[in-house]
Each structure stands twice: as structure tokens, then as C-alpha cells.
Length: 299
Length: 327
Image (cartoon, rainbow over the protein chains, first blue to last red):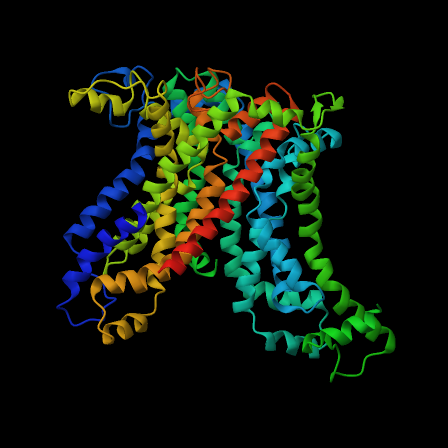
């Protein structure tokens, strides 16, 4: 109700303004001053918490309790950051997270492309049913199986070992779904048939025809997966306790819990934890935006 | 069934290897048939095996665990539905349930409305720096939940928080955001909203831009007013996108965990505040399972939450069907 109301209000005005112009009826208003004003506010709100993170992380802890509060970055970021890495094995956690995220991403991209290829372009009995199963599992909140998942890890002796976080993440239903959709539109059937006629084995077709053509879709999937794994929290929190074996989210939460009064240090740690993804995002954000918008149309 | 039959049945061009190429030897032909028949299964197997082991089995086994008194050393006693009876009589469960729904509604409704509005603004013609705006709105989604929660906990801090500073300088009093039910829910909802509004705006924007121009033209020829265009064309065409975002926020929102946990900061032993005023079902599950190590009881919480989410998702879909047929 509220949603529909907002939509009507939002959409009605510019439409009315566009009426006189020589355009299609869909043509919404041109971007004017008000558009940029609104977007500037939205962008400011969007970036402010990140800015604030750096402000607190770069001042000493007494600056935050000053009235009025300090609102500009200070000179102490490196000092705060070095206190973080000397207080807890934070660099180790960053390294662990990089290992986990890289392994999971490589695996998800490979197996999703493989399975996506099978679902998009190969004939086999049960294909329809199996694919439906994949779609269905996408909405199953599997993290609620966390109690038995933990028991499995105890049984395997994987508690406090990185494979406890890596192995369950090696495949995702979303990945298979995504790659199937991408390969359906990016790999022409004729190309595969031609390859078949030339005597290619199925795996050869996959490696020499499908993989090159599917690369852009796989890249976006890889970005999504890497970020998601980097930010994963509940499962690593449950299965990793040894301070040297933590992923960065768990380490950050522990830092916050133990030193919550040392604002400067905790925020410097927070900055360190988001920095790698922010760098990736600045470099490749365009692809991520594109991926989300394309994905929206397919889903 | 023999492999030969498999190949016969599938009947795709791909399923007929070596048709017109140089005639391969018999042995090679058999191998190649085997390849065609077996490869697809090999390719999809990794997903199904791993999903079965680490996804499907645990979720089903949760139901079994929930029927026991089960502790960390693995000693277990069958107690039937006792965990569920205890749960329904446990005020902590009802508080967590109330909080979960309250935070979910407080974060989802304004978030989706705002996202629609933002999508509409981003949809303007000749917008410059398009990519910049889209990326800037998506940045929060890349930031981890833990980081978001830490920053917002600081912003909503009692003594040195920015929000309270602003309130005080406006002549209003400070609010102890963590102390109240509504105030703590609002603070937590702000975290969720900040992280997801931009993402949802991009989904809506994609949907808005995919509405074919011809639909509007045809409607205009039929004499539709602007309001009718909105009601009969734009809203129905956005419906799948809205359903998608509602389902995603339902699945994610009802499992909300990191935000209340970080907001609590461990000070109250993962209870979600002194009076559990922002304890959620997922937090309660974690507390029972991994702080009190009552696996059976925690499994009952997990199973209830699982059923609850499934029911809510089905409800979402049904309500959307209803709205469509009512039009």
C-alpha cells in the first residue's frame, strides 16, 4: 500500500510535466536541477557512514567525545591501524579471508559454468526437474541448518580450520542458475554442433567454446561470490574460534566486542576490513552494477 | 536402460556424435557415446552432491535434532515435541518473534518505497554521470554487515553518537537508542535500509527501463490518462521486480542476525539488549545453540524459523496473485 502510494506520487509529477513535450508518453522528465539535488542527497547519505568510519578511525579516541564532535579526518589512521594489527592477528584474518574468498570464488565460477553449460546446452534425462530443483533451493534458507552443519564439522574435525568455511561454499544454486541463463544467451548452439562434428569431446567443447564465450558472465558471478564470501559472518562465527584462524568479519566483531570503548582502533579495523572490497568496487563497480541490473531482468 | 537408449531418446543434434566426420573406430564411437551420455550428469553432480551434504541434509536433520535433548558432547535423549512445547511457552521466543517482525516491517516498507522513488529519479532522461550515481548508491551493499553495524552503533551511541548530538543541538533530548523497543528497532532498521535501498533501487530501475515504449504508445492511442498509464502499465510491469525484492527482503530480513548481535556488542551476552528488546529469532537460535549449547532447543528454533520464512514467502506470492486478479 505504502509502496504503491509512493510510486504514484513519485511518478505522477514528472509525467505531467513531460506532457507538452514531443516525446513518447514513457519519456519521463529530463534530468533537471531537482534530479541532481535529490541524487546528491542520496549519494551523501550513501557515502556518509563510510566517511564517518574513516573520521573516527583516523582520530584518537578522545576526539570522538569532544563537543561538538570532530567531523574531519585526523592524522592518526596509521597509528590506530597498527594498534589493531598488534592487538589482534588482524592481518592474519585478512589473509585467511582472502584465501577463503579466492578458493570459493574459483570453485563457484568453475562448477557453475560447468553445470550451467549442461543445463543450457546439453540434453539429458531429468534436466528440467533438476533445474527446477536448483531454482527451488535458491530460496531455501540453508543457513538455518547450522546446528547439524556444525555437528558435521565436529565429526570431520574441521572446526577452526579454513576448509570448514570453504567446502560448504564451493557451489551455489545461484551460481548455476546465473551461468545457465548467461550461457543460454551467449553460446550459440550451432557453434557447439560444429565442434561436435569436428569430433570434440564434451569437455573439449566446454573448455574451448563455452568458457571463452561465457567469460563476461563468469566474471560478474566471480565478483558477486567474492564479495559475498568476504562479508560472510554467521557461519564463520560459529565454526572458527581460534584467533589465528578467523575470517575478517569474525575478527572485526571480536575486536568491537573487546575494545568497544577504543573507538579509534575499532573503526580503523573496520576501515581495514572494508578497504579491499572498496578498492575492487571502485575498479569494477560498473560490471557489478550491470550484473545486478541484468540479473534483475532474468530473475 | 542402456546407454544407447539414452542417446536415442535425447535426440538432440549434440547427442549424435561423429555423425558426418571421418568415421571413427568402434571403440572411439563407444567412448564418445559414453561421453555424451554421462558428461551432463558429471557436470551437474558437484552441485547436487555438495548441496545435499552441506545444505539439504543439515536442514532436514535439524528437524530430527529438534526432537531430542541434545548437548555438545553429543549425548541425546528423545523427547518428542517437548522442545516445541517449551518454545511456545518461552517468553524469550515470543519477544524474539515480535522483534524480528517489527524490525523486518520497519526496515522493508520504507526501504522499498524509497528504492522505487530513487529508481524513478535515476530514470530521468539525459542524466549525466549515470554510472557514478548507480555505483555510489550500491556502495553500502558492498560494505559488510558487521562493518555497517559497528558504524551505525557508533552513530546511534548514547553519549557521543552523531544522531543524539544533532537531536540535542535541535533542543530535543538525547535518546538511549539501545534501551527502548521501538528506538532500538529503528536503529537496527536504519542499518538494513542503508545497506539495501540502493540495491533495490537498481533492481527497480532495470525493470522501469525494460518496459517497452510501445505499451505506453498503445495505451495513449486508446486514450489512457497519465494516471491510467501508471496504474495499468507501469505498476503491472514492475510487479515481478517488486515481488522479487519483497521475497528477497523476507528471506533476508527474517534471518536478521549480525545487526542486533553487533548492536548488543556482547555486553548482554547475546541476549539482544538487557531486556531482549532487540533480540531476534536468528540471534536467539545462535544464543541457544552456540552459547548455551542446547542443540535440540536451538534446532527447534531453527525449524520454526524455517517454516515461518517458507510460509511468508508463499504468502507474498499469494498476495501478489490476489492483487493482480483484483485489478
